[in-house]
Image 1 (cartoon, rainbow, N blue to C red):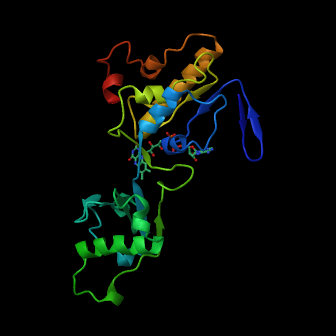
Image 2: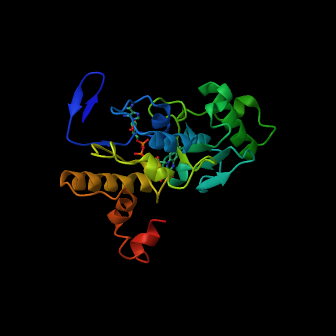
Image 3: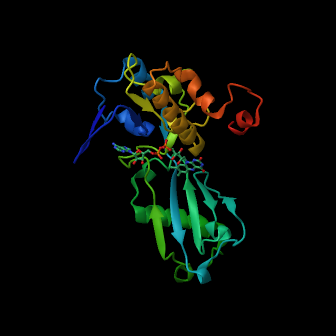
Length: 245
Ligand SMILES: Cc1cc2nc3c(=O)[nH]c(=O)nc-3n(C[C@H](O)[C@H](O)[C@H](O)COP(=O)(O)OP(=O)(O)OC[C@H]3O[C@@H](n4cnc5c(N)ncnc54)[C@H](O)[C@@H]3O)c2cc1C
C-alpha cells in the first residue's frame, strides 16, 4: 500500500490508519481504491465533538482559588475547573470548555476567550469589590482549538442521533474488503472504548492483530478482533471484560 505525503511516499504491505474521525469525515485524505459507500456513510454518521481547554499559569503569590481542591464546577455550565496546582503544577489551573462555547468559542480570539473564562473564575473566588488592578493576572495561558485544528477537526467522537447500530465497526472495516491492505484504529473505531484513550489502545491492539492475521493469510473477523485482544470472548465475566467497560 502506498502512502504519499508532501515530501515522501511510503510503501508497505499493510497500513494502519488512525486518522481522527473529524479528518475521516472531511475526506481530506484520499483512499485509492475509495472506501465503500457503506463505510463512508458510517463515518459520516459518527459524531465528532468539541471539548477544549484553556490553561492558565499564575505566580504562586497570585493563586486566588482553593489551593487543595482538585476540581470544581462553575456557574457557567460550559466551564469546569481542574486545579493542577493541587496535583503539583504550581499556579496552574485548567478550564475544561464544553459545548456550545467549545465549538469555535463564538468566534472569540484567544485573548477574549482567556478573559471571559477568567472572569468566571474571578466571579467565583474574588470579592466583587476587588479593583481591576488588584485582580491577579496569569503569567501564561493556552487556548486549545481541537475542533478547527486540521489534524483533529474535533476532540473525539460521540454517539450522534443519526448513528446506526454497527457504525463503529462499519467505519473501521479493513479495506479493500476483498483483500485488505489498510486496517483502522483510533477511539472512533472502537466498540468498547469510544472517546477515550482506552479505545485508542484496544483498537491499536486490534489493528496489530488484524495485520498479523492478514499477513498470515488468515480470515479476519473484524467484529471479534477487538474482543479477542483482551481475551474477553473466552470469558465475558473475566476481570478483563469488566475493567474495559
Ligand atoms: C480536551 C480533551 C480531553 C480529553 N480527556 C480525556 C480523558 O480524560 N480520558 C481519556 O481517556 N481520553 C480523553 N480524551 C480523548 C483522548 O485524547 C482520545 O480518545 C485519544 O487521543 C484518541 O486517540 P487516537 O489515536 O484515536 O486519535 P488522536 O490522538 O487524535 O491521533 C490521531 C493522529 O492522527 C494525526 N493526523 C491527523 N490528520 C492527519 C493527516 N492528514 N496525516 C497524518 N496524520 C494525521 C494527528 O496529528 C494525530 O497524531 C480527551 C480529548 C480531548 C481533546
